[in-house]
Length: 173
Image (cartoon, rainbow, N blue to C red; front, side, top):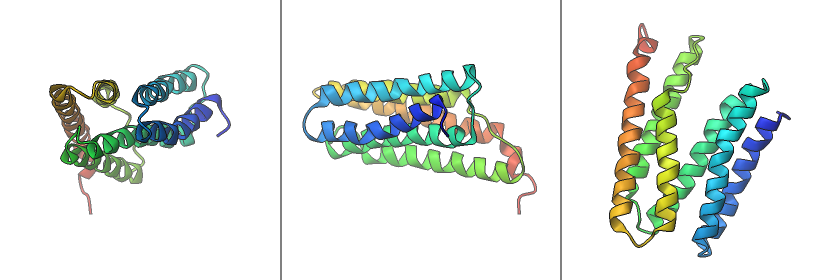
């Protein structure tokens, strides 16, 4: 757990309350800067983990969880401010729970489901889109566009995970 990559992941989690405090105190630009730094730390910890052989079970678990915590924090704030429909967050949560369940079933069968490229695209589109919505509050069309992109990439990647791994449920009890 004391690897540089894991420390960066923990720092990303620690930035979430800072991000939220800035959002709720009306400092959206500063909040967005914190959100961007936290989002970029995902790239950094992944690079360090792979490049310096710091891949760990802690990192495999906490890195994607940190991403979800960051993204869902921003999305919940935007729902509260009326910039994103709550059902969009519900779809994102449903996909996350479904893919996590798929991974649990696979793990019971001694199989690891690696992150798919579409999942990485989904995360990138979501993080970039949320940055725009956090900053450009006056454009309702942007809110709708970002919500649509998040929905499309979320649904596509969720379906892809299940289609590529449907054999996990073969002979399921």
